Length: 349
Image (tube, rainbow, N blue to C red; front, side, top):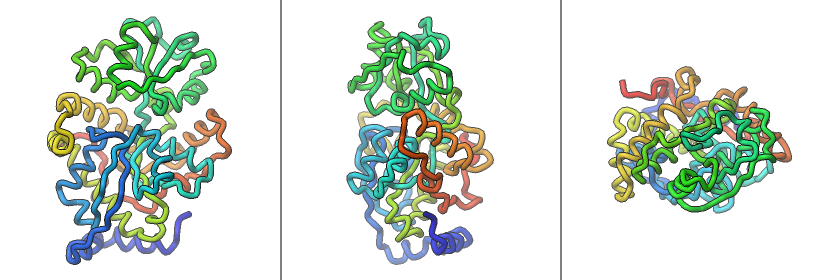
């Protein structure tokens, strides 16, 4: 629930953003926070690395300890269950936590993916040409993959009977899952376009060996990954959360302006990543998963409440969840990026 006192604090912060950062710089004290990532270090979270390396987190009075995650759909539940201060992962999983009235569920404060990143991949020469062709076919993905978890919504939107589709899970790396499909062992693969493409590049397989069915086209109501914050921080330290949002936003802006710098920050933490694959992945994220037209109007990080609510209703209905939560129980709009800092373009000027 939004706190009126916090609203007054944040209005002051937005009106005087420079003053808001002075105490952290002068005092030198930094709040240590534990953050659960969506996965291990990759281009999907490189902006956090860049925000740390360029001092934006420090200027906001923050010192983050990053923990590798096990998939975007697991982040919300693990952030709640394991007591993380911050999490980064799929907002639809956060809807599930709120629908279950989990008192420890975090709330999203900055949505990076304003479109669903999910896809169903099929071989380029597959006879599958439209979603109704999924009937009777075998699709595979990680058990907690976002596309697999939200597939009932795609089926409902396209008139497909989801029970006619055989779905299995495999916890091998994405490269292995896709190569299994290309060998004819399955008909399709659940995942993200950017993750599957990066896996193909890493394996030396031409990206045009696969075709994609995009959730962003078939389920346009859905959003994707978001920065989540424990409610105790939102309620007790709103100025800290406001500083966090601005610091992350700066990291994203710098990533857009200089993708190579973001990958360099990533490689300092994960030297084994394949630079070409991560650059391609980042490019696809910016163009696709973060490229909804509403970003030009609202700025990255914000949501359209009507569209967000429609996505929640669709998810809860198709997954048989107990209730549909209110938008404010999932996304807290009390930490807007100051107008002059809002990201409305996803390409370097």
